[in-house]
Image (cartoon, rainbow over all chains, first blue to last red; front, side, top):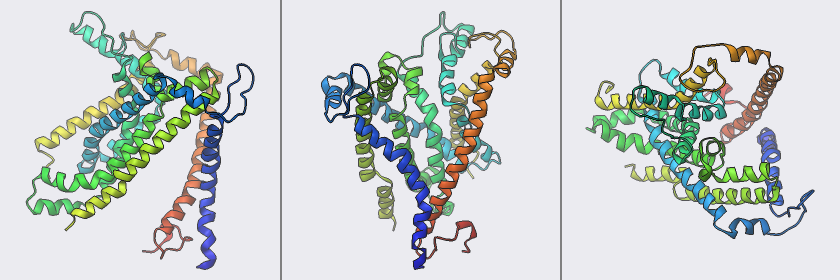
Length: 290
Length: 109
Protein backbone atom coordinates (compact mmCIF):
# COMPACT_ATOMS: atom_id res chain seq x y z
CA UNK A 1 0.00 0.00 0.00
CA UNK A 2 2.70 2.41 0.99
CA UNK A 3 4.40 2.35 -2.36
CA UNK A 4 1.08 3.40 -3.91
CA UNK A 5 1.09 6.70 -2.03
CA UNK A 6 2.38 8.67 -4.99
CA UNK A 7 -0.23 7.27 -7.35
CA UNK A 8 -3.15 9.57 -6.46
CA UNK A 9 -0.85 12.54 -6.97
CA UNK A 10 0.40 11.24 -10.29
CA UNK A 11 -3.20 10.83 -11.43
CA UNK A 12 -4.14 14.27 -10.21
CA UNK A 13 -1.07 16.01 -11.61
CA UNK A 14 -2.37 16.63 -15.18
CA UNK A 15 -5.63 18.23 -14.04
CA UNK A 16 -3.92 20.22 -11.31
CA UNK A 17 -1.33 21.57 -13.71
CA UNK A 18 -4.02 22.37 -16.28
CA UNK A 19 -5.97 24.34 -13.67
CA UNK A 20 -2.80 26.01 -12.49
CA UNK A 21 -1.50 26.95 -15.92
CA UNK A 22 -4.83 27.89 -17.49
CA UNK A 23 -6.64 29.43 -14.53
CA UNK A 24 -4.47 30.36 -11.56
CA UNK A 25 -1.65 32.01 -13.49
CA UNK A 26 -3.94 34.08 -15.76
CA UNK A 27 -5.90 35.27 -12.71
CA UNK A 28 -2.61 36.28 -11.07
CA UNK A 29 -1.76 38.23 -14.23
CA UNK A 30 -5.09 40.03 -14.00
CA UNK A 31 -4.46 40.93 -10.37
CA UNK A 32 -0.99 42.28 -11.19
CA UNK A 33 -2.33 44.20 -14.19
CA UNK A 34 -4.99 45.87 -12.07
CA UNK A 35 -2.30 47.84 -10.22
CA UNK A 36 -0.58 49.10 -13.34
CA UNK A 37 -0.83 52.58 -14.72
CA UNK A 38 -2.35 53.25 -18.08
CA UNK A 39 -0.10 55.26 -20.34
CA UNK A 40 -1.73 57.83 -22.63
CA UNK A 41 0.15 56.23 -25.50
CA UNK A 42 2.31 53.14 -25.81
CA UNK A 43 2.68 50.34 -23.32
CA UNK A 44 1.11 50.39 -19.88
CA UNK A 45 3.46 51.30 -17.03
CA UNK A 46 4.15 48.67 -14.35
CA UNK A 47 3.29 50.18 -10.99
CA UNK A 48 1.71 49.46 -7.65
CA UNK A 49 -1.08 51.93 -7.06
CA UNK A 50 -4.78 51.76 -6.34
CA UNK A 51 -5.83 54.37 -8.89
CA UNK A 52 -7.83 51.89 -10.96
CA UNK A 53 -9.81 50.80 -7.92
CA UNK A 54 -10.32 54.39 -6.82
CA UNK A 55 -11.64 55.19 -10.29
CA UNK A 56 -14.24 52.46 -9.94
CA UNK A 57 -15.61 53.84 -6.68
CA UNK A 58 -15.12 57.49 -7.66
CA UNK A 59 -18.75 58.10 -8.51
CA UNK A 60 -21.89 56.05 -8.57
CA UNK A 61 -21.67 55.02 -12.24
CA UNK A 62 -19.66 51.80 -11.90
CA UNK A 63 -21.00 50.57 -8.54
CA UNK A 64 -24.52 51.01 -9.92
CA UNK A 65 -23.73 48.61 -12.76
CA UNK A 66 -22.23 46.18 -10.25
CA UNK A 67 -25.40 46.30 -8.15
CA UNK A 68 -27.52 45.86 -11.25
CA UNK A 69 -25.46 42.79 -12.21
CA UNK A 70 -26.05 41.21 -8.81
CA UNK A 71 -29.77 42.03 -8.95
CA UNK A 72 -30.18 40.57 -12.45
CA UNK A 73 -28.24 37.48 -11.34
CA UNK A 74 -30.61 36.93 -8.41
CA UNK A 75 -33.63 37.43 -10.67
CA UNK A 76 -32.25 34.94 -13.18
CA UNK A 77 -31.62 32.37 -10.44
CA UNK A 78 -35.15 32.66 -9.06
CA UNK A 79 -36.76 32.50 -12.50
CA UNK A 80 -34.59 29.52 -13.45
CA UNK A 81 -35.69 27.62 -10.33
CA UNK A 82 -39.34 28.43 -11.02
CA UNK A 83 -39.09 27.50 -14.68
CA UNK A 84 -36.73 24.58 -14.22
CA UNK A 85 -38.06 22.61 -11.27
CA UNK A 86 -41.29 21.44 -12.87
CA UNK A 87 -39.69 20.09 -16.07
CA UNK A 88 -37.07 18.29 -13.95
CA UNK A 89 -39.85 16.80 -11.84
CA UNK A 90 -41.62 15.80 -15.04
CA UNK A 91 -38.53 13.88 -16.22
CA UNK A 92 -38.24 12.24 -12.82
CA UNK A 93 -41.84 11.04 -12.63
CA UNK A 94 -42.52 10.44 -16.28
CA UNK A 95 -43.01 6.83 -17.28
CA UNK A 96 -43.10 7.63 -20.95
CA UNK A 97 -40.72 5.70 -23.14
CA UNK A 98 -39.71 8.98 -24.74
CA UNK A 99 -38.24 10.19 -21.46
CA UNK A 100 -34.69 9.74 -22.77
CA UNK A 101 -35.58 11.77 -25.87
CA UNK A 102 -36.98 14.58 -23.71
CA UNK A 103 -33.77 14.62 -21.70
CA UNK A 104 -31.66 14.70 -24.83
CA UNK A 105 -33.78 17.57 -26.13
CA UNK A 106 -33.04 19.69 -23.09
CA UNK A 107 -29.35 19.41 -24.00
CA UNK A 108 -29.96 20.07 -27.68
CA UNK A 109 -29.85 23.88 -27.37
CA UNK A 110 -26.15 23.57 -26.55
CA UNK A 111 -25.59 22.32 -30.08
CA UNK A 112 -26.59 25.64 -31.59
CA UNK A 113 -24.31 28.54 -30.87
CA UNK A 114 -25.36 30.65 -27.91
CA UNK A 115 -24.82 33.83 -29.96
CA UNK A 116 -27.12 32.61 -32.74
CA UNK A 117 -29.81 31.61 -30.25
CA UNK A 118 -29.62 35.01 -28.56
CA UNK A 119 -29.75 36.90 -31.85
CA UNK A 120 -32.67 34.77 -32.92
CA UNK A 121 -34.83 36.51 -30.33
CA UNK A 122 -34.51 39.65 -32.46
CA UNK A 123 -36.27 37.74 -35.24
CA UNK A 124 -38.96 36.62 -32.83
CA UNK A 125 -39.63 39.79 -30.85
CA UNK A 126 -38.33 42.53 -33.14
CA UNK A 127 -40.50 45.08 -34.90
CA UNK A 128 -40.78 42.85 -37.96
CA UNK A 129 -40.40 39.66 -36.00
CA UNK A 130 -42.61 36.64 -35.60
CA UNK A 131 -44.79 37.87 -32.71
CA UNK A 132 -45.49 41.27 -34.23
CA UNK A 133 -46.19 39.70 -37.60
CA UNK A 134 -48.68 37.33 -36.00
CA UNK A 135 -50.41 40.03 -33.95
CA UNK A 136 -50.68 42.30 -36.98
CA UNK A 137 -52.08 39.48 -39.07
CA UNK A 138 -54.89 38.68 -36.66
CA UNK A 139 -55.57 42.39 -36.29
CA UNK A 140 -54.93 42.67 -32.57
CA UNK A 141 -52.59 45.64 -33.02
CA UNK A 142 -52.39 48.33 -35.66
CA UNK A 143 -48.65 48.94 -35.63
CA UNK A 144 -45.73 46.83 -34.36
CA UNK A 145 -45.07 47.09 -30.64
CA UNK A 146 -41.42 47.30 -29.67
CA UNK A 147 -40.54 44.66 -27.13
CA UNK A 148 -36.77 44.42 -27.45
CA UNK A 149 -33.89 46.14 -25.72
CA UNK A 150 -35.06 46.26 -22.13
CA UNK A 151 -34.33 44.32 -18.97
CA UNK A 152 -37.08 41.80 -19.66
CA UNK A 153 -35.45 40.63 -22.89
CA UNK A 154 -32.04 40.52 -21.19
CA UNK A 155 -33.51 38.24 -18.52
CA UNK A 156 -35.11 36.13 -21.21
CA UNK A 157 -31.82 35.67 -23.03
CA UNK A 158 -30.09 34.74 -19.79
CA UNK A 159 -32.77 32.23 -18.83
CA UNK A 160 -32.69 30.65 -22.27
CA UNK A 161 -28.95 30.17 -21.88
CA UNK A 162 -28.94 28.93 -18.27
CA UNK A 163 -32.17 26.99 -17.87
CA UNK A 164 -30.72 23.66 -19.11
CA UNK A 165 -28.03 23.84 -16.42
CA UNK A 166 -30.68 24.27 -13.74
CA UNK A 167 -32.96 21.53 -15.09
CA UNK A 168 -30.12 19.01 -15.34
CA UNK A 169 -28.85 19.77 -11.83
CA UNK A 170 -32.29 19.36 -10.29
CA UNK A 171 -33.01 16.26 -12.35
CA UNK A 172 -29.80 14.54 -11.26
CA UNK A 173 -30.60 15.09 -7.60
CA UNK A 174 -34.23 14.00 -8.06
CA UNK A 175 -33.09 10.86 -9.82
CA UNK A 176 -30.91 10.04 -6.83
CA UNK A 177 -33.92 9.87 -4.49
CA UNK A 178 -34.88 6.38 -3.44
CA UNK A 179 -38.37 5.87 -4.86
CA UNK A 180 -39.30 3.53 -1.99
CA UNK A 181 -39.22 6.57 0.34
CA UNK A 182 -42.02 8.04 -1.73
CA UNK A 183 -43.97 4.81 -1.64
CA UNK A 184 -43.51 4.64 2.12
CA UNK A 185 -44.87 8.16 2.49
CA UNK A 186 -47.86 7.25 0.36
CA UNK A 187 -48.45 4.08 2.43
CA UNK A 188 -48.43 6.15 5.61
CA UNK A 189 -51.33 8.12 4.24
CA UNK A 190 -49.68 11.13 2.68
CA UNK A 191 -51.44 12.66 -0.26
CA UNK A 192 -49.43 13.07 -3.47
CA UNK A 193 -48.80 16.72 -2.62
CA UNK A 194 -47.79 15.98 0.99
CA UNK A 195 -45.41 13.26 -0.17
CA UNK A 196 -43.84 15.73 -2.55
CA UNK A 197 -43.55 18.43 0.11
CA UNK A 198 -42.22 16.19 2.86
CA UNK A 199 -39.98 13.81 0.90
CA UNK A 200 -39.17 14.80 -2.66
CA UNK A 201 -38.72 18.53 -2.22
CA UNK A 202 -36.31 18.43 0.75
CA UNK A 203 -34.28 15.67 -0.84
CA UNK A 204 -33.95 17.57 -4.11
CA UNK A 205 -32.75 20.78 -2.46
CA UNK A 206 -29.03 19.95 -2.87
CA UNK A 207 -29.56 19.88 -6.63
CA UNK A 208 -31.51 23.14 -6.54
CA UNK A 209 -28.76 24.67 -4.44
CA UNK A 210 -26.00 23.54 -6.79
CA UNK A 211 -28.00 24.75 -9.79
CA UNK A 212 -28.55 28.16 -8.17
CA UNK A 213 -24.86 28.57 -7.54
CA UNK A 214 -23.92 27.61 -11.09
CA UNK A 215 -26.56 29.87 -12.66
CA UNK A 216 -25.64 32.79 -10.40
CA UNK A 217 -21.93 32.66 -11.19
CA UNK A 218 -22.52 32.20 -14.91
CA UNK A 219 -24.98 35.11 -15.02
CA UNK A 220 -22.68 37.47 -13.21
CA UNK A 221 -19.94 36.81 -15.73
CA UNK A 222 -21.82 36.84 -19.02
CA UNK A 223 -22.01 39.78 -21.39
CA UNK A 224 -23.75 38.55 -24.54
CA UNK A 225 -27.47 38.82 -23.60
CA UNK A 226 -27.17 42.43 -22.39
CA UNK A 227 -25.05 43.27 -25.44
CA UNK A 228 -27.47 41.78 -27.98
CA UNK A 229 -30.85 42.05 -26.29
CA UNK A 230 -30.32 44.94 -23.89
CA UNK A 231 -30.62 48.67 -24.32
CA UNK A 232 -28.02 51.24 -23.30
CA UNK A 233 -29.23 51.13 -19.69
CA UNK A 234 -28.99 47.36 -19.28
CA UNK A 235 -25.22 46.87 -19.30
CA UNK A 236 -23.89 44.37 -16.84
CA UNK A 237 -20.44 44.35 -15.29
CA UNK A 238 -19.00 41.96 -17.88
CA UNK A 239 -20.05 44.36 -20.64
CA UNK A 240 -18.10 47.04 -18.84
CA UNK A 241 -14.99 44.84 -18.70
CA UNK A 242 -15.45 43.98 -22.37
CA UNK A 243 -15.73 47.64 -23.32
CA UNK A 244 -12.66 48.62 -21.27
CA UNK A 245 -10.41 45.83 -22.51
CA UNK A 246 -11.55 45.38 -26.11
CA UNK A 247 -13.01 48.82 -26.77
CA UNK A 248 -10.66 51.30 -25.17
CA UNK A 249 -7.74 48.87 -24.62
CA UNK A 250 -7.62 49.97 -21.00
CA UNK A 251 -6.26 46.72 -19.58
CA UNK A 252 -5.41 48.01 -16.09
CA UNK A 253 -8.89 49.39 -15.43
CA UNK A 254 -10.57 46.34 -17.00
CA UNK A 255 -8.45 44.11 -14.77
CA UNK A 256 -9.40 46.13 -11.70
CA UNK A 257 -13.12 45.69 -12.51
CA UNK A 258 -12.52 41.96 -13.00
CA UNK A 259 -10.80 41.69 -9.63
CA UNK A 260 -13.67 43.57 -7.95
CA UNK A 261 -16.21 41.24 -9.59
CA UNK A 262 -14.16 38.20 -8.66
CA UNK A 263 -13.88 39.24 -5.00
CA UNK A 264 -17.57 40.05 -4.78
CA UNK A 265 -18.52 36.70 -6.30
CA UNK A 266 -16.11 34.96 -3.95
CA UNK A 267 -17.74 36.61 -0.94
CA UNK A 268 -21.25 35.75 -2.16
CA UNK A 269 -20.39 32.14 -3.00
CA UNK A 270 -18.57 31.69 0.29
CA UNK A 271 -21.48 33.10 2.29
CA UNK A 272 -23.88 30.95 0.31
CA UNK A 273 -21.90 27.82 1.04
CA UNK A 274 -21.52 28.81 4.66
CA UNK A 275 -25.20 29.39 5.41
CA UNK A 276 -27.20 27.81 2.62
CA UNK A 277 -24.67 25.42 1.19
CA UNK A 278 -25.07 21.85 0.19
CA UNK A 279 -23.67 20.54 3.48
CA UNK A 280 -26.10 22.61 5.48
CA UNK A 281 -29.05 21.21 3.58
CA UNK A 282 -27.84 17.68 4.17
CA UNK A 283 -27.46 18.45 7.84
CA UNK A 284 -30.90 19.97 8.15
CA UNK A 285 -32.35 16.89 6.55
CA UNK A 286 -30.50 14.64 8.94
CA UNK A 287 -32.02 16.68 11.76
CA UNK A 288 -35.60 15.75 10.85
CA UNK A 289 -34.88 12.08 10.44
CA UNK A 290 -36.43 10.04 13.26
CA UNK B 1 -49.67 6.05 -10.72
CA UNK B 2 -51.11 9.52 -10.87
CA UNK B 3 -50.24 9.96 -14.51
CA UNK B 4 -53.84 10.86 -15.39
CA UNK B 5 -54.57 13.45 -12.69
CA UNK B 6 -55.10 17.16 -13.27
CA UNK B 7 -51.89 18.04 -11.49
CA UNK B 8 -49.88 15.81 -13.77
CA UNK B 9 -51.52 17.35 -16.85
CA UNK B 10 -50.55 20.80 -15.60
CA UNK B 11 -46.96 19.64 -15.13
CA UNK B 12 -46.96 18.31 -18.67
CA UNK B 13 -48.34 21.53 -20.11
CA UNK B 14 -45.81 23.55 -18.13
CA UNK B 15 -42.95 21.38 -19.37
CA UNK B 16 -44.22 21.73 -22.92
CA UNK B 17 -44.26 25.53 -22.58
CA UNK B 18 -40.70 25.54 -21.25
CA UNK B 19 -39.68 23.50 -24.28
CA UNK B 20 -41.40 25.97 -26.58
CA UNK B 21 -39.43 28.77 -24.93
CA UNK B 22 -36.14 26.89 -25.29
CA UNK B 23 -36.73 25.81 -28.87
CA UNK B 24 -38.38 28.88 -30.39
CA UNK B 25 -35.01 30.54 -31.18
CA UNK B 26 -33.64 27.37 -32.75
CA UNK B 27 -36.72 26.79 -34.88
CA UNK B 28 -36.62 30.39 -36.06
CA UNK B 29 -32.95 30.04 -37.01
CA UNK B 30 -33.65 26.90 -39.03
CA UNK B 31 -36.65 28.46 -40.78
CA UNK B 32 -34.76 31.65 -41.61
CA UNK B 33 -31.90 29.67 -43.12
CA UNK B 34 -34.24 29.03 -46.06
CA UNK B 35 -35.15 32.68 -46.31
CA UNK B 36 -34.56 34.06 -49.82
CA UNK B 37 -34.02 37.63 -48.64
CA UNK B 38 -31.11 39.44 -47.05
CA UNK B 39 -32.76 40.19 -43.73
CA UNK B 40 -34.48 37.78 -41.40
CA UNK B 41 -37.89 39.38 -41.30
CA UNK B 42 -41.36 37.93 -41.37
CA UNK B 43 -43.36 37.22 -43.48
CA UNK B 44 -40.95 35.13 -45.51
CA UNK B 45 -41.44 35.22 -49.27
CA UNK B 46 -40.82 31.73 -50.53
CA UNK B 47 -38.13 29.22 -49.76
CA UNK B 48 -34.62 29.10 -51.18
CA UNK B 49 -31.31 27.33 -50.71
CA UNK B 50 -29.47 30.52 -51.63
CA UNK B 51 -27.60 30.80 -48.33
CA UNK B 52 -26.50 27.18 -48.34
CA UNK B 53 -25.03 27.59 -51.84
CA UNK B 54 -23.28 30.75 -50.70
CA UNK B 55 -21.92 28.89 -47.69
CA UNK B 56 -20.52 26.08 -49.80
CA UNK B 57 -18.73 28.63 -51.99
CA UNK B 58 -17.15 30.53 -49.14
CA UNK B 59 -13.63 29.18 -48.61
CA UNK B 60 -12.95 30.94 -45.33
CA UNK B 61 -16.11 29.59 -43.73
CA UNK B 62 -15.24 26.04 -44.78
CA UNK B 63 -11.78 26.52 -43.35
CA UNK B 64 -13.26 27.82 -40.09
CA UNK B 65 -15.56 24.82 -40.02
CA UNK B 66 -12.57 22.47 -40.35
CA UNK B 67 -10.79 24.35 -37.57
CA UNK B 68 -13.83 23.94 -35.36
CA UNK B 69 -13.91 20.20 -35.95
CA UNK B 70 -10.19 19.76 -35.25
CA UNK B 71 -10.22 21.94 -32.14
CA UNK B 72 -13.44 20.37 -30.87
CA UNK B 73 -12.09 16.83 -31.15
CA UNK B 74 -8.75 17.79 -29.59
CA UNK B 75 -10.47 19.54 -26.67
CA UNK B 76 -12.72 16.53 -26.11
CA UNK B 77 -9.82 14.06 -26.13
CA UNK B 78 -7.49 16.08 -23.91
CA UNK B 79 -10.05 17.17 -21.33
CA UNK B 80 -11.63 13.73 -21.13
CA UNK B 81 -8.18 12.22 -20.60
CA UNK B 82 -7.30 14.67 -17.82
CA UNK B 83 -10.78 14.34 -16.35
CA UNK B 84 -10.69 10.54 -16.23
CA UNK B 85 -7.42 10.61 -14.30
CA UNK B 86 -8.73 13.14 -11.79
CA UNK B 87 -12.08 11.37 -11.34
CA UNK B 88 -10.32 8.04 -10.94
CA UNK B 89 -8.26 9.47 -8.13
CA UNK B 90 -11.17 11.08 -6.30
CA UNK B 91 -13.44 8.05 -6.59
CA UNK B 92 -10.62 5.93 -5.26
CA UNK B 93 -9.98 8.20 -2.31
CA UNK B 94 -13.60 8.24 -1.16
CA UNK B 95 -13.13 4.95 0.59
CA UNK B 96 -9.92 3.81 2.26
CA UNK B 97 -10.59 0.20 1.28
CA UNK B 98 -10.30 1.00 -2.40
CA UNK B 99 -6.85 1.10 -3.78
CA UNK B 100 -6.27 3.97 -6.14
CA UNK B 101 -4.96 1.70 -8.83
CA UNK B 102 -8.21 -0.03 -9.81
CA UNK B 103 -10.67 1.88 -11.98
CA UNK B 104 -14.33 1.73 -10.92
CA UNK B 105 -15.32 -0.37 -13.91
CA UNK B 106 -12.82 -3.11 -13.04
CA UNK B 107 -13.66 -3.23 -9.36
CA UNK B 108 -15.52 -6.17 -7.96
CA UNK B 109 -18.19 -5.12 -5.50
